[in-house]
View 1 (spheres, rainbow, N blue to C red):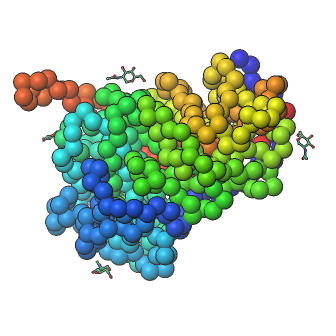
View 2 (tube, rainbow, N blue to C red; view 1 turned 30 degrees about the vertical axis):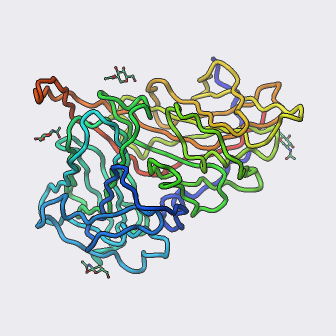
View 3 (cartoon, rainbow, N blue to C red; view 1 turned 180 degrees about the vertical axis):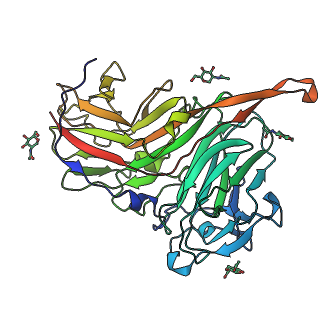
Length: 414
Ligand SMILES: *[C@@H]1O[C@H](CO)[C@@H](O)[C@H](O)[C@H]1NC(C)=O
Ligand SMILES: *[C@@H]1O[C@H](CO)[C@@H](O)[C@H](O)[C@H]1NC(C)=O
Ligand SMILES: *[C@@H]1O[C@H](CO)[C@@H](O)[C@H](O)[C@H]1NC(C)=O
Ligand SMILES: *[C@@H]1O[C@H](CO)[C@@H](O)[C@H](O)[C@H]1NC(C)=O
């Protein structure tokens, strides 16, 4: 497939900081649950039920040596009404080089989402942004690079756990004191994210929901039963139409990704019917050379009822200028749809994904959400003879997910 003709027009400016800043009201609201979630508020004095998600948070006391590190509250100037309570406090580790949290009672061979949260908030009154390393067990996970005192950095990985317990370790480098605000573990159905398996894990680089007009409109638990965090990607009304529906979107229970309905109820489309959609996913902030490549998932749902009109919406999906799906794609009215990479692909500085309307299409493409992951090999450790069964143990090599760097969304005319 040849490179599509280079086309540019309005490049929509977008502030990455808005998406990183946890300044918005979390929209979720619900009961505490017992789904096997572990929600740890590091450095906090007591457990509590978070009023925005309804999730029960515990202190980190049972997960780390009592004498490891110091507890601090962040500076009040970084607390807004919508700052998650788990970010109010941190545990910091000024003295020992390596400090570990141990999550136990996991089920070996099951799939989990693990997420670290880091909001510096000038907790030490030093106004010095630290850089440090994260490990899973003895294996390098990622470098946590705090770029702004008031910006929460999230790291997330989806993995099949090799063991009933998992250690997350903060490792001091020469650039300041490691700290952590929160640590979450969420069990996933094993069929979800099929490319996360015993030999490879997925490290989240981007997850965006299109269509919300309010940058505070973050979707997570309970709207997402797996508590993935879907940050809104805000577009400019001059170039884009925000689409939304209050109608139910049919979810396929056998779906491999199971996006929350609230994510599928919104989408964006170019305002000018002659325009297409192009994403440029910048990889430069990530240690991408450590991985096996990348995968992405695109979520689509038609939100306009086209049944009584002659309108046609169909488009091709290109990745770095090459057709990634041999057929034209038509999103289904009020029904979950998705397109995903069936195997990891290589990329250098960036990944360009284009949705190009076919010649027959009378409407421009739409998109509801996108996820991009780095695929990381997990290394076999050996075997365990417990219960007479042979269980393969693997060490995980997982790199980062710092949320939201330079995703550029463009309109392209044809
Ligand atoms: C942080 O603030 C809470 C609530 O005001 C308080 O109970 C706790 O002792 C403070 N922690 C530290 C380390 O100062
Ligand atoms: C697996 O669990 C055992 C204890 O149950 C522990 O000694 C070992 O280090 C763990 N392995 C990994 C890779 O975490
Ligand atoms: C994991 O998925 C990859 C395909 O991306 C496959 O090659 C590998 O064999 C799978 N591993 C297991 C243990 O199923
Ligand atoms: C829509 O896009 C086409 C192609 O770029 C351009 O020629 C046309 O002027 C645009 N229409 C409007 C209303 O902006």
